[in-house]
Length: 470
Image 1 (cartoon, rainbow, N blue to C red):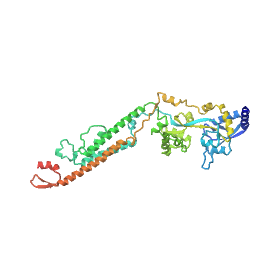
Image 2: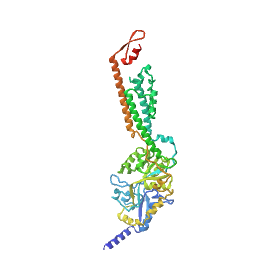
Image 3: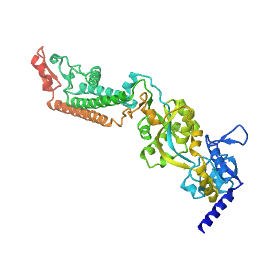
Image 4: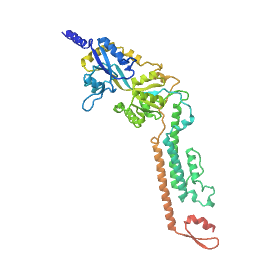
């Protein structure tokens, strides 16, 4: 009895398509569906799959490309547009394209077994031998804002040391000229203070150190800042020197994580694609927000992203569906595909009737999907897989060395800011106490060389040398 039922079911399914002409909706997208020279004629991966299924099930078909190029999105009222709308409304029997199978779509239409598997990857400019410029490498350990901040803080510290020297009662400038045996009174004028800052940045010696508490505290914090910055610079410079091997092509990154760490190559996706935002991977989430922080990183079509990768020549990477990236890389040897496969998806043929999908799925084993994949995604550039490309001795993978920014060096800048604030406070306190002491002691009576008496403002300590000379 069971055998009879199976035979009847198979006959039912066969009769369902036998000799029928099925209406197929699709989307013009290379290499799935492309126009030929003849009107109304098409070629591509989708056409070859349909031809194999039609031969196995003895049906004919006619393709009508979707005018708006939409695969299918359900609105708030539950209505589908695009190819999905054609299936739901029974205006088409099949939707054959790179139509992704999703839970929402499976609720309203049926799908065959997968005809294609895909994922998202990165299309990049094929690495070239970089120009060797040693001068540029010297500036790469720090980002541009750090270099600007360094110049600013050097000016601030130098000028502040000159101010402390000018107004602090215990600094070199307050030593009477006859007592200045080492000619140190001018050690911290503006010019000399800036020179002092420069010599300490270069770890060179200096003639005199500040005498006042505020000047010494500021200098101590400045020395700590310099030590921190030089250590960070040398360590990161070593990373860049190791990473940048001359006379070899350099691949900037090979994974999504490495791409997120670097800042030399901009990256973006299609403006309407939000798979990065949907992902549970925090790295992909960060890539989403970074790519959308600059509208120039977004593109409307895959072709636009491909052209941008070519025109930017190593300064832009396009995140797109892997099969699209492979198609571009197989036809243009100036680009290549990197990145692990993320957000894997299945593409299948959608059916307006579940019985039709069952029949097509049973015949899918007769479709040479692997051969069709090689036919429509040829490797015209004879490029080897990424793993083999990276193992070549003439190729260098750029290690994730990146310039240090102000956030990375925030501890050093906070330490210096503390030194500036405390140094200014100590200067103000010192000046206040000196003036208070002078006011308390009052004027000092001195005898001049001609025997006349004179009242001169000043402290006993400041006037002692003059009194003794008189």
